[in-house]
Length: 290
Ligand code: FPP
Ligand code: MG
Image (cartoon, protein in one colour):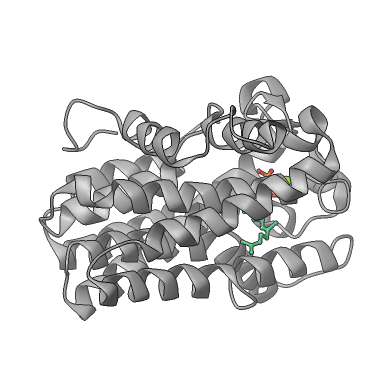
């Protein structure tokens, strides 16, 4: 990240926290814990944890306070990817350049590893002090993930497969499926930094705009890249009749929309002030080839 989080990359910081918080493989049942570690420590971008750390830094807080929350949002994200890849959902074999968790460990262990990651994420944020902060973090994560957040977005993503959709529906799906957790990650960094409610709201709005831009870029890359470049399936959205911006508008208008969302997100940062890391992350989310 082109930011100010110090010498260590956001990925190294997040992975150190994940390594510390995830149960060791030696702990029974070792296959379950191996699957949890495989999912979380595989070579991903760690963008969501970086948004927690960057937001905490933006409000002037010591980012080490945010390490555990950063790991918690990555646990939720990895849980959602394990389940997203299952045969009953997107049925994908490749993720982050390696076999998906159900391919490597079997479906039963994959489902249970996801369940355990979700529980561990909430335990991790519930341990924050003071208790009022822990409550706010739990609420933020609950709202982002439940039947008004990720689950709702994923449900509609699956339910409208192969059916004609309008722009409002695609946006509704993407705001929940992808925007909600990135928005919550930014808000959580602000909460840990004891930011004022308007600043936390601004960080959440920034996260939603950039989360949406991230998903638009993801859909563009699904059409324009190869599995080797992406480390996951390519061309699959169109084959499955997924609701996407390029599917609805074509690549050029989808690119324009991603740029517009990026600009909107940066304008929100102007309200907050010192946000070098967040600006770098916003760019990394949209201007990327994998
Ligand atoms: C990837 O999208 C999937 C998501 C962003 C979210 C998936 C959400 C769930 C499975 C619900 C999880 C449940 C809770 C309680 C959090 P994609 O399929 O468009 O992208 P991909 O090409 O990377 O698979
Ligand atoms: Mg998928």
